[in-house]
Length: 116
Image 1 (tube, rainbow, N blue to C red):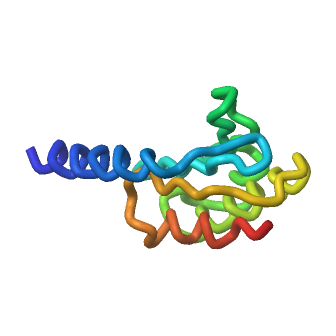
Image 2 (image 1 turned 180 degrees about the vertical axis):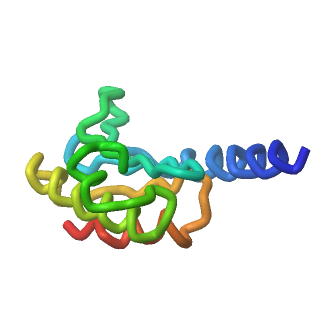
Image 3 (image 1 turned 180 degrees about the horizontal axis):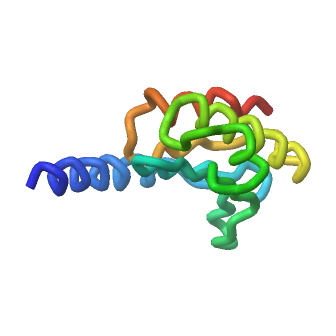
């Protein structure tokens, strides 16, 4: 029962956040999802409804540097690789969507590595 309360609270926060956050092709929305073992991020152009760049700690480029995906170190490395991919695409500004999660721990570690 507690699990559903936590999930429902996150989804309620997510709705409120998404009312004010909107991504474009020049300034995409960076959406973060975290599970117990992994973290995922994607740059989304909401105007066309397309994902520009995506990453997770399951990709070989990230996986070779980490032992376990559910910690802050893995989120930092994932964020660094994601930052490089954004630069390659020529993205200079972003809007960070924490997806209802607190800006703390792994979400903060990933977000802090994105320096454009």
